[in-house]
Image (cartoon, helix red, strand yellow):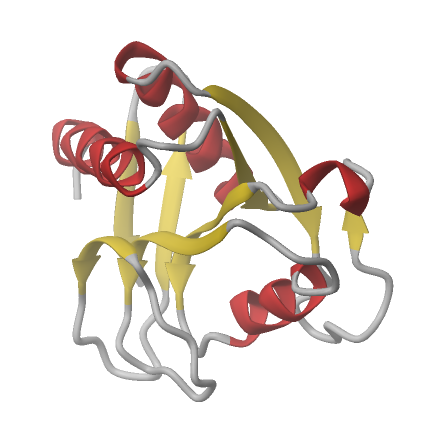
Length: 159
């Protein structure tokens, strides 16, 4: 996947988020550290051009090997109470990271909760639904999908 395709996907996801949250005055994009957060920033940039809603950007750090340990969120959970949020990551592998992110964020009532990923690998082990996705890839479990966000050239490769 090259820069042009990633740009088109980001624009499409931004429009989907906008359409799904037209009546919301404030939307929180919560990116999973590290690439999910970078993707969130790119979506935020697109959303600001099409939406009148206030678009907030947050980062959620989850230990991917042990998601029960120290989840870090750079906002106070009270700030997102009764707000619309979108939890964003670059690649959905098993769904483990996203499901623990959802669990953490559901500690308080929300107006609307959606998920978005750039690439869905179709290897879910956890019951997580993706509302907005760029592409679905059928890969072998041994293959690894890497997304690289460089300043002037972003791409995704399969190892």
